[in-house]
Length: 356
Image (cartoon, rainbow, N blue to C red; front, side):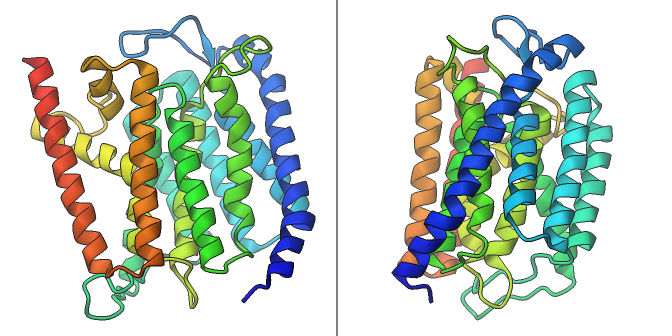
């Protein structure tokens, strides 16, 4: 167990240079890549589904990934796991850039995501096989079936964070909520050796979020994350969740992972279910996401962002509280499923009324 002096030493001598390097690199990358993106047409253009002013550079993902790459290369030990994560992330960012530029088909994106998922599974060599005391009868182990589960979990989280990106500040807010929650859970679980990873991602995201929300609009134009960034965040989150919930000394229970990713996860699953019921392709783009429904219900973009962000914070806070107070994992699972059913039915009802 770490002493307070040990924690202070880590914070001062390890985290500060790491954080400063990450933040500055992300900031420089935004300014450096922005004119290039405009020149080559790596921009988001207004259309029926995307209502914004002008062409917005899709560089948030590039700046975030490069900052993570630079900071980890300089300050963290070179391990097989980290190398595989960075290689898989680079592949996913490249696929995302192609999608942002040329609007790839769903099939091509899924093929690319599948290759990345396989690289993570067999390159890193770890997978989710321990579900904790999920059913109340002791630790639930699924053994080699965990490879299949982890494969689909990677695809789900990649697409969940990709699909939530539809409103200024929304993806950034959801990502920070999840990553900060993971960092808190690492601290609670005395897992200081992995604390660097979520913190690097948090500070790599901050410049993007500031420019995305036009906080520095006098100095730079608005930017978007793009598919390159949203998919990269999803991959990073599932990797960190695996690190936090698996192994001999896990930092938190697998069911807690549901609570700290609740809104992106529930939004994706609910909308896929609605699309399938309507006979539509599950990944066909539409305007039935939570943020679209809130705006169609009369909320402004700022109020919609505040509402969804508050929902995420409350869900994460409850998940962390349940972990701290050692609520039965089966209870936490049942509560999560109940909230998901209520959430899904409420959105379906509101959506049907708006259509009518």
